[in-house]
Amino acid sequence: MKINVTDQTGKKPTSHTEIPDEWFSWKERDTKALETVSRPSLSYWKDAWRRLLKNKLAMTGLVFLILLTIFAIFAPILSPYEVNKQNLPDQYQPPSSQHWFGTDNGGRDVFTRTWYGARISLFVGLMAALIDFTIGIIYGGLSGYKGGRTDSMMMRIIEVLYGLPYLLVVILLLVVLGPSLGTIILALTVTGWVGMARIVRGQVLQIKNYEFVLASRSFGAKTARIIRKNLLPNTMGPIIVQMTLTVPSAIFAEAFLSFLGLGIQAPFASWGVMANDSLGAILSGHWWTLFFPAFFISFTMFAFNVLGDGLQDALDPKLRK
Amino acid sequence: MLRYIGKRLLMMVITLWVIVTLTFILMVTIPGSPFNSERGTNEAVQANLEAHYNLDKPYIVQYVLYLKSIVTFDFGPSIKQPSQTVNEMLGRGFPISFELGIITIIVAVLSGVTLGVFAALKHNQIIDYVAMGFAVLGISIPNFVLATLLIQQLAVNIEWFPVARWLSPAHMILPVTALATGPMAIIARLTRSTMLEVLTQDYIKMARAKGLAPWKIICKHALRNALMPVVTIMGTLLAGILTGTFVIEKIFAVPGMGKYFVESINQRDYPVIMGTTVFYSAFLIVMLFLVDIAYGILDPRIKLHKKGGRE
Image 1 (cartoon, rainbow over the protein chains, first blue to last red):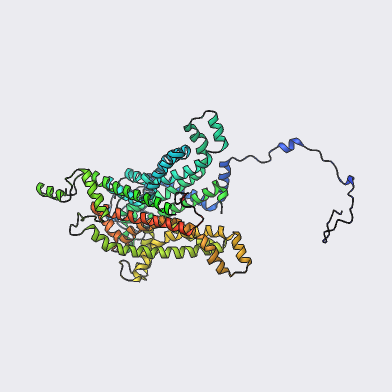
Image 2: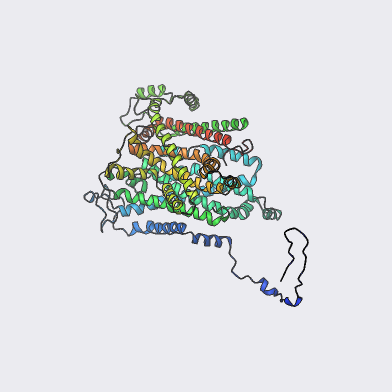
């Protein structure tokens, strides 16, 4: 079969070859088959979950965090040792079948204390993320949605708070308020919510001009309802990623503060306290007192970081690099 | 440009004022006078002391005096070591901390950028995976954990480096490594991702088509543009390095500002804590300001007067 071919000189085609009609046959158009959906439809969340499942590193992080949570809940209950009770004859026992992670300077079981520390770290991390989330979406949502003068006023406040050095403010507050679990969480969230508010505002600013928001408003929906029902569900992706990344920074801050002596007070266990206590011990070779809390701080932060990265890729495939 | 600088300058002054006022409110809120010690001072002595430090005046007068002392850069004496003023401590400690900080930043930027560029050039190859694995580890391991591990492995076990103190270049290696690893990892990841983006741009293809040497393309055309995001996060990194010096100086017994700060926290020496916090905050806020201005000058694409700073 020959089709019109223009030759290289650009002249008109010299000859046509006719294609006989009987070469073609009419195919029945199956309107029903056209309408069937061959695969089950995937919602945004299902699709994101599927992408996350494929990300091995992020899944490793997720599995580690689930295991960590289970151990943090049950290990201190099931352990035969008390968390804070000193037992000096057993000081600095290396890891053995009795003390799986060895014992520390007070003869306390490092295994039990590590999981107890996991409770503190996870609690501080999750609470900080939750409070940041609550304040951040209310403030950022309002600022972005109202726009105009309200927005620029609210953003000025954010700019000032954003300029404050985070850990210095936290240290200052803790010095005055006195160290305890509650004050640590308070201090971490006093300026911590600013990042979340900025992200929510940016998102809301973008989405509020879409037609479905206009439609909702024309049906008479109130501001609170529009923010809650239209805007927030559509900003969830970046918010979740931000929350996942808040947790490790809060865990780091708690460990850092405990290490400075401003966090959870000894004899109560947190990973930072344990690391601080073992500073002298490792010089004399009792490596296990530092190794286990250090390992779990690092691995927990690692897990949250890779999970956050994975979630970012999964929830916002456009940004994928 | 000038308008933008003016606006940022105003913002900076407000931020400084907020931190100074916050410190003052916190100082006033602390229950009891700083001179309530367990030994119980004579009432007349205490009244004298309070008069000496203007603590008997109304809060508003104290506040004005406090603002004045801050503006004139006089943070007063230490309560626990009355022979020393906070200024003397700053004068003695800050140069050392500054040295530690500067070396750390240089090391972090140089190694981070190099690592990021190599990872981007060998995208999805072994070098890329190794570099990025290293970077994720660097972000995850807290600096104080890394510091103790380094001491235990390299100073105690195999005795390559001195355990602590700040006397010779050999003393600097471990603290700088511990402090620089985190920022280095962040810079490496950022450089890699922006480098990957830049390398697909048309002007890189153009440069390649013209037959420029690969190193020239990378250094002159790609890297210059890829480094812009690194400049934007320098402020955050500076804050991290600065607070990092507290623990690093504590662990390595470096006689810098961080050591005084941690000691003052443990002894609840309020004037020192407040003075150092204000000083550090001011330092950081000015640094952030400079980073912002530098960013504006380096990247002509940004219309400074329209957008409000780093976004």
